[in-house]
Image (cartoon, helix red, strand yellow):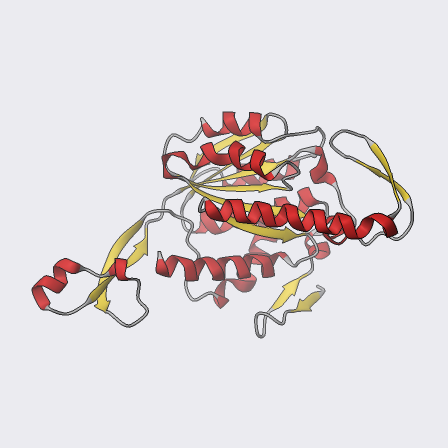
Length: 305
């Protein structure tokens, strides 16, 4: 199995996305990816939004002052901080964009295939910590709805296996309907290529934050959509509308790269301002490296929240 060496995670070796595309079983794929890096994390990744008190420890410089137990200080005249353990059995739901643009690829794996691999791995992580997992696929409307359940992991994988990028899509209408499905606090993972105005995207997904839901966003793009490495003049097709656009890359490439960089930055900034986790997922990046980097950063963030 071809592997790539990572410079960012010492000693780690990661599986090329094209290899994942040849693994026919999504559960095997998820286990292959997750079990390959999970031991490198300091503790098991946790997706829940609620936490339970575990124990006290002495305060050290740099600790979050909000974690200081002031009642214990009043009794002991010493500073102690509260430590917490994750409260499992969370509702965990993947929202997967299956609109036509997600079918694009310049390499071996389409954006939808990569997004499906990602969704399978995240669901596997949630399932192994006994969370209830579910999935909603959408384009211009809700295509498939599998409600979160402790028994729905295999149904989720089957849904991912059947997902096809066939019809054009937009966020606002399906997400409005999707938000109505969440009647208890949940962890929601939204995976899309977000080819809409950043302000429109933000307004569309705001309802998903109601009830205190935790919203995690993965922005999936093909390397050609980021780098625009084309050389020859040709016609490009908008996969959503079917419109053809003749382009001379030499005269358009630099401007395009500025526009896509601005789009990515605007999405990242707006999500950050509303406490929404945002990760850019380039389909050329080994999936286990993407997940390791994201979960390591999340682990650090959870320590200070």
